[in-house]
Image (cartoon, rainbow, N blue to C red; front, side, top):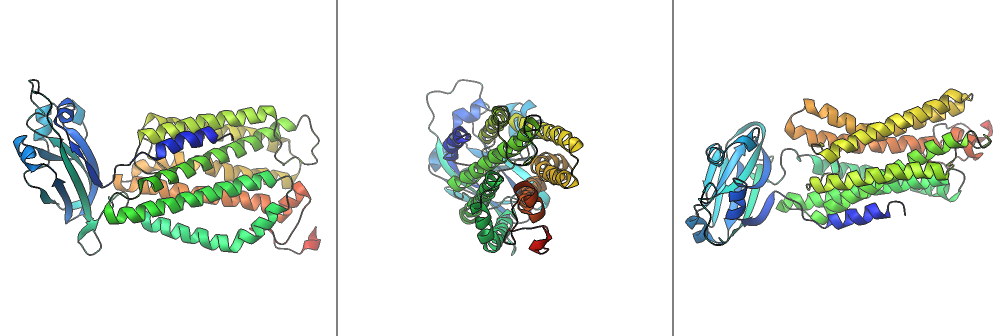
Length: 430
């Protein structure tokens, strides 16, 4: 129930449509006039034979208003330009004078972002507009060349390759599931002091798998029509948000529980999940803070990416929170390891620290490193890197809690059926 409010608020956001590479809407003169041009969308073209096609619903009205599309490369210093300077700075100008039109984009030496804006004769007009001017419905489609050089690829350069990555990841999840589902189910049924940890890890891994599956469904449809299934993309983000919340709650609860329990309880079972009102309150505080920032970030960036480059204030605060939580966990674990005499238990805590730090730090580190890459590479590096790193983190924690040697130490259980074991010796070793 601790994440119910996060799930509810995020799900209300999940029904909002996303901006795709086939964009439908209305060209509005009043909006263009108020903003010195109506911003439509952006698209990263690469190579040659890039294409932008439009379809209009009311051509005579568009001709009467002298409607046109303005295409820009780069938006640096754009806000400081006057209306007339903006219009004249357009790299390409397309007059909207026919029901349908295809415009070939100039050859790109390297992937470049093209921004599309709408303007008409009222946009830079200083006098007040007479009456309410009707809008013009449109559909805009942007296409990159495919492997054969034909303009049929709806994916922007920053998204190219993600579809194949999600497919390979689904295949990897399926193979791992076939191998480990039965022994993992047996381990969960045995119970024990680490039963809650294993349930949270399994739930987080399941949510990660569902997020990958929903992203794949969204992008498979997106490859055909440039719009995709926005609901699937939003559900993928929702699953990832809940997984982040669950993992944070588990890691904070374990660390705080271990620290607070050392002075008041015996050390017969020092590594189990030992919740207390204080540790639960601290964990819930971190969960609520992260949940609020995650939802805030999703509202600020409507494109369907579970992991963003964090150009917004919410994203920056979220990264700062993850770094702060890493420092907190490092401080807590350092106190525990410094006072621990058992080498086996110190190894346990060190392995736990590696898995925890990898989960929290991978995103901020990848965002920091992404500044050295080109614009079309940043989103892919962050997305692929975070998914892989957090999957490795879950595997490390699984191996830790299901390893026969360490699991025997904390729960006096040992079984050759436990999956992902670190030691393969005979049972009579213990």
